[in-house]
Amino acid sequence: MKKALLVVRILMGLLFLFSSTTFLFKLITPPEPTGEMKIFSTGLQASVYLMPLVKIVELVCSIAFLSGKFVPLAAVLISPVIVNIVFVHAFLGPEGLPLAILLVLANSFIAYNYRDRYKPLFIP
Image (cartoon, rainbow, N blue to C red; front, side, top):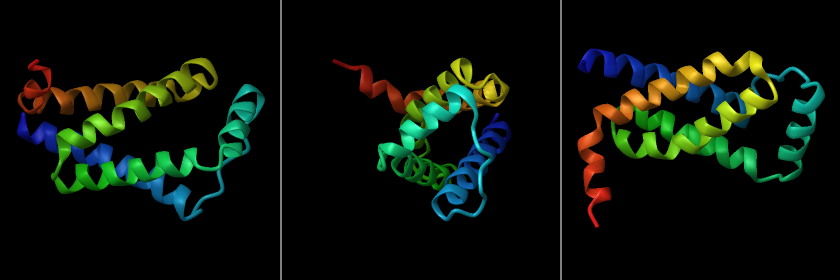
C-alpha cells in the first residue's frame, strides 16, 4: 500500500507541477477553446486573479505531493480545484472528464491513506 501511495502521490504531484509551471511561466501556448468553454475561459481571464491563484495552489500542492511533506494538507487544498476540474469537464468539455475522474480517485486514495490525520477535525 505504501508503494501505491508513493506512485499516486508522485504522479499527482508531477501532473499539477506541469500544469502550474506551464501556465505561470507561459511555457506552452494552450489551444484556443471553442464554444461554451471559450466563454468560460474568457470569464476566468477577465477575473485577472483567479487562474494565477489556482495555479499557485496547484504548484504548492504539487511540491507537497512530490516532497512527501504536508500531504494531508495538500490533499485538502487541491480538492476544490479538482471538483471544479470535474464540473468544467462534465458540463463544458467532456473530452477531459476521464482525467478529471482519475484525479478524484487519486486524491481520494491519498486522503484515505491519511484518514487518521483527519479524525481530529471531526471532533466537536
